Image (cartoon, rainbow, N blue to C red; front, side, top):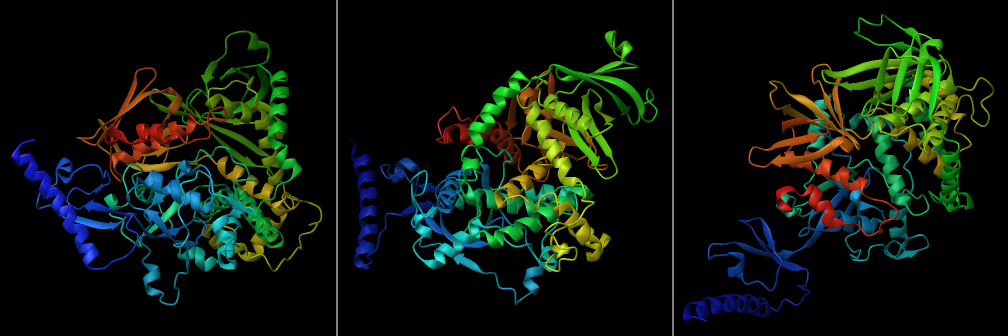
Length: 619
């Protein structure tokens, strides 16, 4: 090598020698293995120890900070508990979340992420309400994919009674919050407020320090992708509990809309879960029924495939608002075949050409049900070139509603009535209707005037204003009769099933400006679709399904997202309330979630996740 290269090499070596001599002269004896250099100007870690400073492009004016890679972080969980634990500040947020979930015994960490909390101004005034923080900083970090269990909990939680108590708080549902606690929580007043919250997700491809997160900062751990895979109550104690808590707070804070009957059912389930969890020490216990559940479902699926049907026909009342062709509700003979419904004037004319055939693939299906009033409506929002066409189907009874609702849901996903899940979908809908029925007989094991029920802890503030506690109690107790016999595990699962059946379930919102438009609109990002929403009115304008998506691109220079769908449909938009990387990560993340299957290895394909969500940084 040349004399100049030898001089540069000696400078690098001398700087390293001086650095370690400085440490040894100060007689600092400690484990430095977790420390690394952080380049402040470039916002990057120097983790390749085989590289020279020159190879990194570091010059004399660079400021390097020697600091630990793992630092304390205050982590707020969905159930309201705050933990102080050591998190990795040098790895990507995706890997950091994986490490946190390993520590807490939460499977499938790809469904969760870190969210910057909303500033709570009210808490500054209340000096007496000091937040209790549970310390886990002494828990050693493990690289194993699954923690070693002892008595059903990770070994590090079995070290002391204090640690066991913390794990119990993670794995057992919390009692219903007091009304004043609910009132203090931040509530999004509009879809724009929700969009601002959803714009606070951290970038999964970058580390905490690159995103301005410092030691002892406060973050929220939340389920980000609402595509829950391989949910096993026997192994997912903490995962199920935290998911239930996140769903419960979404209902109580009105982050997701539901009908009044559904709210009473949610309240009854919360009351039952709280009541049973006080008597059952373990949140979820293994049973023969649960062990055999998977094999039973598989055999049931085989039977259903033999019992599948190709079409069904019924007399159904139809209503199409804002249409000149149909004024009000009108009775027709409807025929359901494949993923389409056709309607005729009468059964006799059904052998000929229909008045109209409607393809339900990609449509929005929403229930409008009141069992007490015998109201069984199915609301369909059907994609059309000019927007979304709205159609209501009014069924005569529960049986007809369950069949047609199940058929519409499957058709919207591109599945026919011959699909093996058709019968199970019908059964799920019937179970939901049965729970909504009010009990006309005695109240069974529920007292008529149960003083232990704090109804304002079970429903959202909207109903605090609408009804008094004396009016809510009998309605919640009526709904309670239909869930009183459920075990704790079944009650939690039923709560999550009803939550997932809500029309707006899983939607994350971003305010965007579509190309060629002069006004802001809302983009709803769901587990299987994108929704265009009119910001002024709140109506769904258009729906696009991921299974119709051909490709999506991001122009990182002008921060614009472009998506191409089948049928030569192209859309492009710029994000207003969030970085376009968040939208890109949501779309790529949901597509990644759809690639998971039992046939593949349980090992998480982290490389594929970053390819789909990382954007230009991944390349």
